[in-house]
Image 1 (cartoon, rainbow, N blue to C red):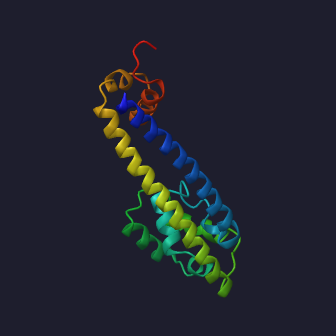
Image 2: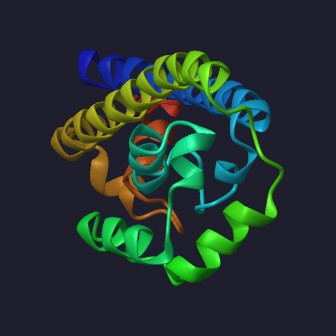
Image 3: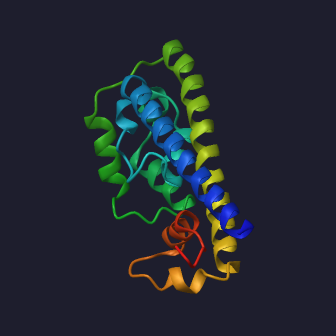
Length: 171
């Protein structure tokens, strides 16, 4: 049916965007390895909202060097950071990592960091948009209860199964 075809297309588009997100995160990570190694692996995932906000705010080695424990703790509070890692530990990780370039070189690299961040943030946002649309399309589908009842089938997995298997009962 048309409902199933649309659901299949939404799920496949999401899968494609996930591949792009992974590629963009890998590209950003490779860039950060040379620009500001202390920011790599600081938070749970590079594409997590806290990581994106941190890199947008502290985009150079100079900015990392200017961080104190109190300043970082205040910024984390304002971001409503719920991680279990304290500001002191995060700051220790930053200082333990090799230093990146500073000065004019860092300013030039910041433009690259910003561009890569914009791409990654856009992908994360659009994946979220598709997630909501997939959930809505799945919940409106007449066969949703059948697939939602499968073991360990969350909304996205059940939607993908429905989209790929289809709703042709004869199959």
